[in-house]
Length: 67
Image (cartoon, rainbow, N blue to C red; front, side, top):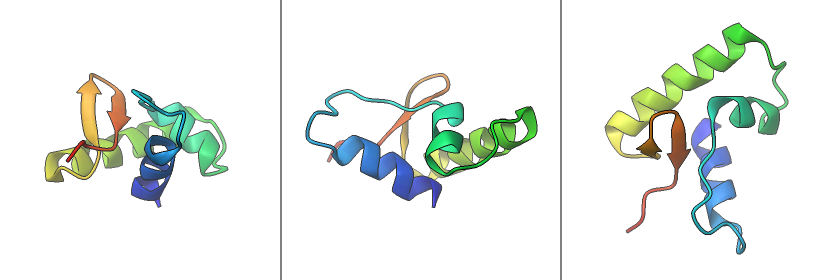
């Protein structure tokens, strides 16, 4: 679900250079914006970034990797 949110944000036609923070991913997934949820999403994004699914362009900013 997290990868889908990042991909959808990056695929939007006006989304050139858009990167999401964990808080924004929580909001897009309709999760309560609480420190525990934000931290869990951030950790999952980091794990996915290690696999190359989203790219971490700057610390804490995630976007769809460019082909």
